[in-house]
Amino acid sequence: REAHEMQFEKPAKAPRQQITDPEELRMYKLRKRKTFENTLRRNRMSIGVWLKYASWEESQKEFERARSIFERILDIEYQSPSIWLKYSEMEMRNRFINRARNVWDRAVQLLPRVDQLWFKYALMEENLGNFEGARRIFERWMKWNPPEKAWMMYIALENRSIGSKEDKIHRCRQIYDRFIDKHGDENAFIKYAEWEYKKSRSAEFARKIYEKA
Image (cartoon, rainbow, N blue to C red; front, side, top):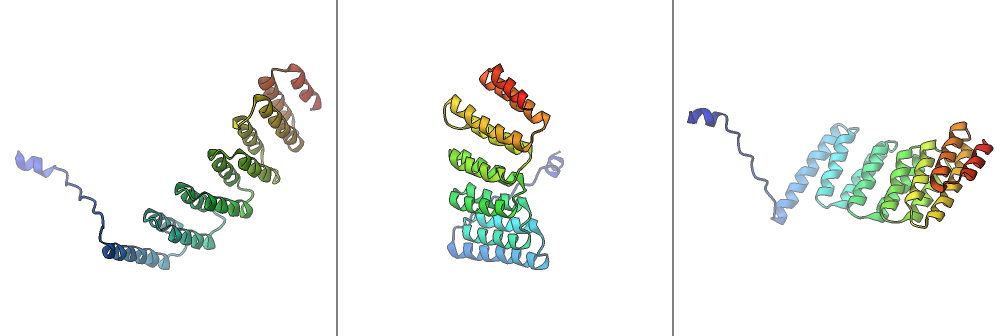
């Protein structure tokens, strides 16, 4: 019976070892980098390996090296939104806020039609309590005449922003007015009128919107 139990006993996991000796740590990093570089030499287009490399450098607190790797990835494939997202998220995760802004700024300039980049950029500023900064990003975004969803995101931002109820309603109305100028179909007017009645409880204001349609 004892032998039977031992047969099915799960092998113990080896304990994680932490390298404390500086020279040993230096050699470990050299070996790890060499492995990544050799792999990429054989398959330069393997974005997954590049991203693992950057993530490993970040885990070692080697932020300049991680940035260098992200820049090398972008030299290969700058049109991939996910790379820009991971790059900026690395900067945010480690509280390099201005560096994150620079990455987002480059991303939306190069890929202005990718709505996710604009939204994530604005969301970062909002999470930092910088509503003015988020508003400026949305204003830049709106110049590209994005789809309806983007305008609704802008209105949602104003609803969450700091200020009196009256101020928020006023700013949202201004955005809705611009929205129906760009997307002036029947559904846009209905959406605006329903929002107006819900927020102001004014049938008169809602009626005026329907009359514009």
